[in-house]
Image (cartoon, rainbow, N blue to C red; front, side):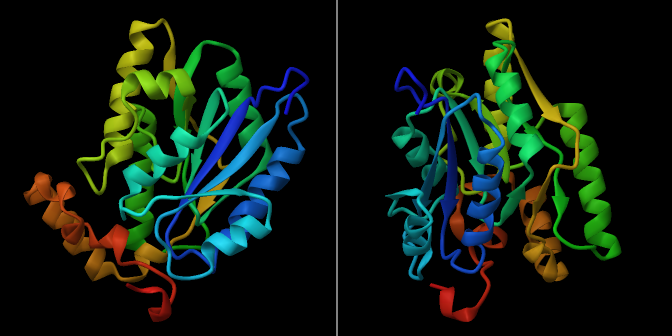
Length: 249
Protein backbone atom coordinates (compact mmCIF):
# COMPACT_ATOMS: atom_id res chain seq x y z
CA UNK A 1 0.00 0.00 0.00
CA UNK A 2 0.98 3.61 -0.41
CA UNK A 3 1.89 5.81 2.54
CA UNK A 4 -1.73 6.84 3.04
CA UNK A 5 -2.91 3.22 3.04
CA UNK A 6 -4.65 3.45 -0.35
CA UNK A 7 -3.98 0.94 -3.11
CA UNK A 8 -3.49 2.68 -6.43
CA UNK A 9 -4.29 -0.16 -8.81
CA UNK A 10 -5.73 -3.66 -8.90
CA UNK A 11 -4.73 -6.22 -11.51
CA UNK A 12 -7.67 -8.59 -12.02
CA UNK A 13 -7.11 -12.00 -13.58
CA UNK A 14 -10.21 -14.08 -14.38
CA UNK A 15 -9.32 -17.76 -14.61
CA UNK A 16 -11.01 -21.08 -15.29
CA UNK A 17 -8.80 -24.20 -15.24
CA UNK A 18 -5.63 -22.25 -16.00
CA UNK A 19 -3.20 -24.30 -13.90
CA UNK A 20 -0.90 -24.67 -16.89
CA UNK A 21 -0.45 -20.95 -17.59
CA UNK A 22 -1.51 -18.99 -14.50
CA UNK A 23 1.96 -19.09 -12.90
CA UNK A 24 3.61 -17.57 -15.98
CA UNK A 25 0.97 -14.86 -16.19
CA UNK A 26 1.29 -13.96 -12.52
CA UNK A 27 5.08 -13.96 -12.78
CA UNK A 28 4.93 -11.45 -15.62
CA UNK A 29 2.52 -9.24 -13.65
CA UNK A 30 4.66 -9.38 -10.51
CA UNK A 31 7.79 -8.56 -12.51
CA UNK A 32 6.02 -5.55 -14.02
CA UNK A 33 4.82 -4.40 -10.59
CA UNK A 34 8.40 -4.39 -9.27
CA UNK A 35 9.27 -1.75 -11.86
CA UNK A 36 6.46 0.56 -10.76
CA UNK A 37 7.71 2.19 -7.60
CA UNK A 38 5.44 5.24 -7.50
CA UNK A 39 2.21 3.23 -7.38
CA UNK A 40 1.01 0.51 -5.03
CA UNK A 41 -0.94 -2.44 -6.39
CA UNK A 42 -2.59 -5.78 -5.73
CA UNK A 43 -3.30 -8.89 -7.78
CA UNK A 44 -6.74 -10.49 -7.65
CA UNK A 45 -7.35 -13.85 -9.32
CA UNK A 46 -11.01 -14.67 -9.89
CA UNK A 47 -11.37 -18.43 -9.78
CA UNK A 48 -14.32 -19.02 -12.11
CA UNK A 49 -15.21 -22.39 -10.56
CA UNK A 50 -12.06 -24.21 -11.69
CA UNK A 51 -11.72 -27.95 -11.20
CA UNK A 52 -7.91 -27.94 -11.29
CA UNK A 53 -5.23 -26.27 -9.13
CA UNK A 54 -5.66 -22.75 -10.52
CA UNK A 55 -6.76 -21.22 -7.21
CA UNK A 56 -4.07 -22.98 -5.16
CA UNK A 57 -1.30 -21.92 -7.55
CA UNK A 58 -2.50 -18.32 -7.55
CA UNK A 59 -2.75 -18.18 -3.75
CA UNK A 60 0.69 -19.73 -3.44
CA UNK A 61 2.10 -16.93 -5.57
CA UNK A 62 0.64 -14.27 -3.31
CA UNK A 63 -2.46 -13.32 -5.28
CA UNK A 64 -5.74 -12.69 -3.51
CA UNK A 65 -8.18 -15.31 -4.79
CA UNK A 66 -11.92 -14.74 -4.98
CA UNK A 67 -14.48 -17.23 -6.25
CA UNK A 68 -17.14 -16.70 -8.89
CA UNK A 69 -19.25 -19.88 -9.30
CA UNK A 70 -21.08 -18.87 -12.48
CA UNK A 71 -19.03 -19.71 -15.58
CA UNK A 72 -19.05 -16.43 -17.48
CA UNK A 73 -16.14 -14.18 -18.39
CA UNK A 74 -18.06 -10.94 -17.84
CA UNK A 75 -19.27 -12.02 -14.42
CA UNK A 76 -15.78 -13.14 -13.41
CA UNK A 77 -14.35 -9.76 -14.37
CA UNK A 78 -17.11 -7.91 -12.53
CA UNK A 79 -16.55 -10.10 -9.48
CA UNK A 80 -12.87 -9.12 -9.45
CA UNK A 81 -13.73 -5.45 -9.83
CA UNK A 82 -16.14 -5.72 -6.91
CA UNK A 83 -13.38 -7.12 -4.71
CA UNK A 84 -10.74 -4.63 -5.86
CA UNK A 85 -9.37 -1.88 -3.64
CA UNK A 86 -7.54 0.08 -6.32
CA UNK A 87 -8.67 3.33 -7.90
CA UNK A 88 -7.42 1.94 -11.21
CA UNK A 89 -8.45 -1.46 -12.60
CA UNK A 90 -6.41 -3.56 -15.02
CA UNK A 91 -7.94 -6.75 -16.42
CA UNK A 92 -5.44 -9.32 -17.70
CA UNK A 93 -6.41 -12.73 -19.06
CA UNK A 94 -4.82 -15.74 -17.38
CA UNK A 95 -2.98 -16.70 -20.58
CA UNK A 96 -1.49 -13.27 -21.27
CA UNK A 97 2.00 -11.95 -20.50
CA UNK A 98 2.68 -8.26 -20.02
CA UNK A 99 5.97 -6.37 -20.05
CA UNK A 100 6.92 -3.81 -17.36
CA UNK A 101 6.69 -0.75 -19.66
CA UNK A 102 3.04 -1.54 -20.36
CA UNK A 103 1.99 -1.37 -16.71
CA UNK A 104 3.99 1.81 -16.24
CA UNK A 105 2.36 3.41 -19.29
CA UNK A 106 -1.14 2.43 -18.15
CA UNK A 107 -0.64 3.90 -14.69
CA UNK A 108 0.88 7.06 -16.15
CA UNK A 109 -2.13 7.52 -18.43
CA UNK A 110 -4.74 6.83 -15.77
CA UNK A 111 -2.88 8.95 -13.25
CA UNK A 112 -2.90 11.92 -15.62
CA UNK A 113 -6.65 12.34 -15.14
CA UNK A 114 -7.13 12.65 -18.91
CA UNK A 115 -7.63 8.97 -19.67
CA UNK A 116 -10.63 6.95 -18.46
CA UNK A 117 -9.43 3.64 -19.86
CA UNK A 118 -8.37 1.66 -22.87
CA UNK A 119 -6.52 -1.38 -24.13
CA UNK A 120 -3.29 -2.34 -25.84
CA UNK A 121 -1.99 -3.83 -29.07
CA UNK A 122 -2.25 -7.62 -28.96
CA UNK A 123 0.36 -10.04 -30.27
CA UNK A 124 0.35 -13.82 -30.08
CA UNK A 125 2.90 -15.82 -28.15
CA UNK A 126 4.15 -17.66 -31.24
CA UNK A 127 4.16 -17.29 -35.05
CA UNK A 128 0.82 -18.00 -36.68
CA UNK A 129 -0.39 -19.61 -39.87
CA UNK A 130 -1.59 -17.29 -42.62
CA UNK A 131 -5.27 -17.15 -41.68
CA UNK A 132 -4.73 -16.52 -37.96
CA UNK A 133 -1.97 -13.96 -38.68
CA UNK A 134 -4.26 -12.13 -41.11
CA UNK A 135 -7.08 -12.03 -38.54
CA UNK A 136 -4.67 -10.63 -35.96
CA UNK A 137 -3.51 -7.86 -38.29
CA UNK A 138 -7.13 -7.03 -39.10
CA UNK A 139 -8.02 -6.86 -35.41
CA UNK A 140 -5.01 -4.67 -34.65
CA UNK A 141 -6.16 -2.23 -37.32
CA UNK A 142 -9.79 -2.21 -36.15
CA UNK A 143 -8.83 -1.96 -32.48
CA UNK A 144 -6.68 1.10 -33.06
CA UNK A 145 -9.04 2.85 -35.47
CA UNK A 146 -12.26 2.19 -33.56
CA UNK A 147 -10.65 2.33 -30.10
CA UNK A 148 -11.85 -1.10 -29.00
CA UNK A 149 -9.96 -3.01 -26.32
CA UNK A 150 -9.18 -6.71 -26.68
CA UNK A 151 -10.49 -8.77 -23.79
CA UNK A 152 -7.05 -10.05 -22.80
CA UNK A 153 -6.05 -6.56 -21.58
CA UNK A 154 -8.40 -3.78 -20.51
CA UNK A 155 -7.68 -0.90 -18.14
CA UNK A 156 -9.84 1.83 -16.63
CA UNK A 157 -10.47 3.96 -13.59
CA UNK A 158 -12.64 2.33 -10.94
CA UNK A 159 -14.98 5.33 -11.16
CA UNK A 160 -15.35 4.95 -14.90
CA UNK A 161 -15.91 1.22 -14.55
CA UNK A 162 -18.72 1.67 -12.05
CA UNK A 163 -20.44 4.52 -13.84
CA UNK A 164 -20.21 2.83 -17.24
CA UNK A 165 -21.86 -0.25 -15.77
CA UNK A 166 -18.99 -2.73 -15.87
CA UNK A 167 -19.01 -5.71 -18.22
CA UNK A 168 -22.34 -6.78 -19.67
CA UNK A 169 -23.42 -10.02 -17.97
CA UNK A 170 -26.04 -10.68 -20.64
CA UNK A 171 -23.33 -11.86 -23.07
CA UNK A 172 -20.85 -14.72 -22.94
CA UNK A 173 -18.43 -13.17 -25.46
CA UNK A 174 -17.67 -9.70 -26.87
CA UNK A 175 -18.22 -8.10 -23.44
CA UNK A 176 -15.00 -6.12 -23.87
CA UNK A 177 -16.37 -4.53 -27.06
CA UNK A 178 -19.55 -3.32 -25.39
CA UNK A 179 -17.57 -2.14 -22.38
CA UNK A 180 -15.20 -0.21 -24.65
CA UNK A 181 -18.14 1.54 -26.31
CA UNK A 182 -19.84 2.44 -23.03
CA UNK A 183 -16.67 3.62 -21.31
CA UNK A 184 -15.65 5.60 -24.39
CA UNK A 185 -19.00 7.41 -24.32
CA UNK A 186 -18.69 8.01 -20.57
CA UNK A 187 -15.16 9.35 -21.02
CA UNK A 188 -16.31 11.78 -23.70
CA UNK A 189 -19.03 13.16 -21.43
CA UNK A 190 -16.48 13.65 -18.67
CA UNK A 191 -13.77 15.34 -20.72
CA UNK A 192 -11.56 12.24 -20.89
CA UNK A 193 -10.51 9.77 -23.57
CA UNK A 194 -10.45 6.03 -24.18
CA UNK A 195 -7.38 4.89 -26.08
CA UNK A 196 -5.41 1.90 -27.33
CA UNK A 197 -1.68 1.71 -26.58
CA UNK A 198 -0.18 0.79 -29.96
CA UNK A 199 3.02 -0.85 -28.75
CA UNK A 200 4.00 -4.54 -28.69
CA UNK A 201 4.09 -4.98 -24.93
CA UNK A 202 1.79 -7.94 -24.35
CA UNK A 203 1.47 -11.42 -25.76
CA UNK A 204 -1.52 -13.68 -25.40
CA UNK A 205 -1.85 -17.40 -25.95
CA UNK A 206 -2.68 -18.50 -29.49
CA UNK A 207 -4.34 -21.72 -28.27
CA UNK A 208 -7.73 -20.74 -29.72
CA UNK A 209 -6.13 -20.60 -33.16
CA UNK A 210 -5.05 -24.23 -33.13
CA UNK A 211 -8.41 -25.36 -34.51
CA UNK A 212 -9.00 -23.17 -37.58
CA UNK A 213 -12.28 -24.89 -38.48
CA UNK A 214 -13.65 -24.23 -34.99
CA UNK A 215 -12.58 -20.59 -35.24
CA UNK A 216 -14.27 -20.19 -38.64
CA UNK A 217 -17.44 -21.84 -37.38
CA UNK A 218 -17.60 -19.56 -34.35
CA UNK A 219 -17.08 -16.44 -36.47
CA UNK A 220 -19.77 -17.57 -38.90
CA UNK A 221 -22.29 -18.32 -36.14
CA UNK A 222 -21.81 -14.94 -34.46
CA UNK A 223 -21.79 -13.07 -37.81
CA UNK A 224 -25.04 -14.67 -38.94
CA UNK A 225 -26.66 -14.69 -35.51
CA UNK A 226 -25.24 -11.84 -33.38
CA UNK A 227 -27.47 -12.81 -30.46
CA UNK A 228 -25.38 -15.99 -30.20
CA UNK A 229 -23.14 -14.17 -27.73
CA UNK A 230 -25.98 -14.45 -25.21
CA UNK A 231 -25.63 -18.24 -25.14
CA UNK A 232 -22.58 -19.92 -23.64
CA UNK A 233 -23.11 -23.04 -25.74
CA UNK A 234 -22.70 -20.98 -28.92
CA UNK A 235 -19.53 -19.28 -27.63
CA UNK A 236 -17.57 -22.53 -27.49
CA UNK A 237 -14.38 -20.92 -28.78
CA UNK A 238 -14.08 -19.10 -25.44
CA UNK A 239 -15.52 -21.73 -23.13
CA UNK A 240 -14.34 -25.07 -24.52
CA UNK A 241 -10.69 -24.21 -25.13
CA UNK A 242 -8.40 -25.57 -22.42
CA UNK A 243 -5.00 -27.17 -22.31
CA UNK A 244 -5.88 -30.80 -21.66
CA UNK A 245 -8.86 -33.07 -21.48
CA UNK A 246 -8.33 -33.36 -17.72
CA UNK A 247 -9.34 -29.72 -17.33
CA UNK A 248 -12.53 -29.97 -19.37
CA UNK A 249 -15.89 -29.94 -17.65
